[in-house]
Picture 1 (tube, rainbow, N blue to C red):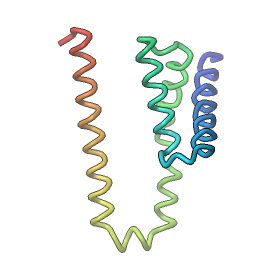
Picture 2: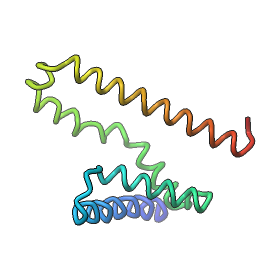
Picture 3: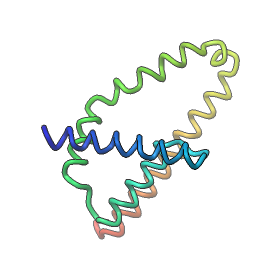
Picture 4: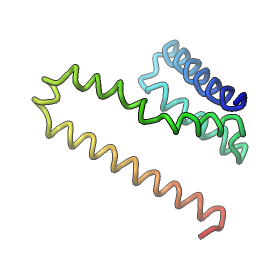
Length: 118
């Protein structure tokens, strides 16, 4: 339980720290993207994910459906825009999802090949 809370706290603090740095430097990139890149480079250099971060991330994954409620409420708030441009929004969401899936698949394949499992 302590490791789980420490992992969640670490991830939240990292996000707030990156957000502060992003605002101070005026970077046009979302804080979550910068934080994920930092985590990726750090974990890759360590060749492992610390146990407390792993437990915190697993706890967050169990409640991830709840994290989609605010975006859904926001979409309902801008209903007129959604209804006026449905094709553009559909293409944007579909395209970005496909790009994410392809990149994730290629990255996974490269990592598995590098470790010699395939």
